[in-house]
Amino acid sequence: MIKTVPNHRGFVLVHPERGVYVGRTQDFTFWSKLDAAGRDAVATFESEAMARVHVAAWDSVQHGHGMESEFSCYPVTVDVPGGWASVAALRAAGLDEHLGELFHPGWGNASGNC
Image 1 (tube, rainbow, N blue to C red):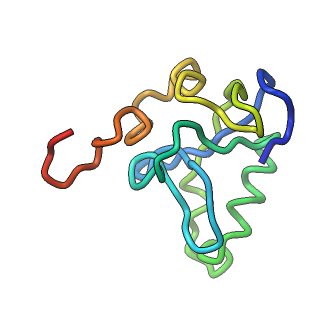
Image 2 (tube, rainbow, N blue to C red):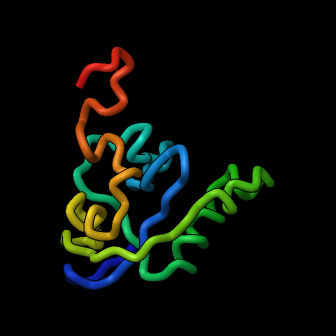
Image 3 (tube, helix red, strand yellow):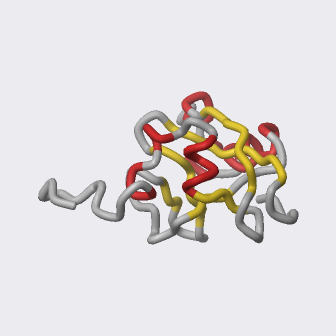
């Protein structure tokens, strides 16, 4: 993840069904269309290559599931301290269709209500 001052360029990972990569803990990976973990910003990477290295390190990819080809990288402005990109930065990069829960916390509500 980028560790620079805000308003630099970074890259975010996007998966067609999962949305924007939000971040990861030791046990879970968070995505804007699945579970944004209550975040209002997403992790960024210094380069597309660094993002791909991050994906390649995941166990499921290492075991030959071929997921690495399903991801795209998009440049965004890093506008939150600590190397994060806000919803506004994602929108400015044209990623509205991938925002999911970042757009509205009730986006994936099973009952269909926000």
